[in-house]
Amino acid sequence: WKTVAHPSPDWMRKRPPPRRGSGPGNSWGRSRLRSSRRPRIVTWLSLGVLSLSALYLGRLVLGLRLADLPYTVPRAYVSLSGGVWGALALGTALGLFFGRTWAPRAARAGALLFAAWYWADRLLFVHTEYARRSWPAAAALTVAGVGFTLWALARPHVNHYFGRSPDERRTQN
Image (cartoon, rainbow, N blue to C red; front, side, top):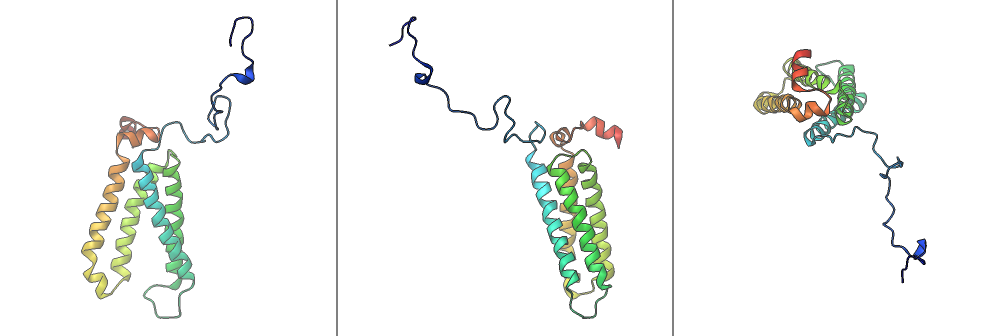
């Protein structure tokens, strides 16, 4: 029993379970990211760009192992373009995911430049019946991809996550 003269000892008191990693003064397990949560649309966009990076880094690797056949482009073009687009997409995906202030501009510019390069490459170097028949689907996917990227990066909560308000973005660009 408890009385004022004889309180129960400390070991008998019920204590809450210890906190794991996020208590005051404890930095173990705490994220080093900003305190604002990443919008889901940024996560999805960065995963899409990361997927594109994986495809083009695969192009780099496979381009290094091409068989000796006649090609419409130099063999180094396949590897070089895969390496360049793979590395740029990887950097942009990581920048988007970790909320770097330069990432939205890089993603906008990258989406437009990639679309222009893709269509120039397709029209200049790809001469197959499949390419002629599938251009409407490729055009629709290009418009959808660029449109989604530009739309997603124009959302107010996305601009807030990257540290810029829509008004600041209009005056700076």
